[in-house]
Image: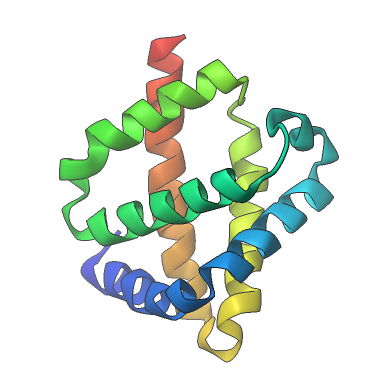
Length: 137
């Protein structure tokens, strides 16, 4: 990711923060629509999981400009996801749900440049998690 992409992600995320509950609802709704089999990974009420999602997203977005510093935490997240049964192919579905959610939440602010920046950011995150998961298994 280049500096401009980092700035686009971080700036656009500022518009997501105030609607984080709605964004989390949209994300999980879309995720289960894209792949209903993923629902079984989430037991009971999703309230806590939605909070964790938004906290993790905020952490990663804030750390994009110093990604090396957050790599250990991102790797640990990838390793934990192995324990949940998450496979590398699931990351594509999650990425699609995330981009769709951002498009819904940001609306006209979700320009092609912003979308490309988020694709780069998610690619970096997913690749780091997948690589850590492969080492862990």
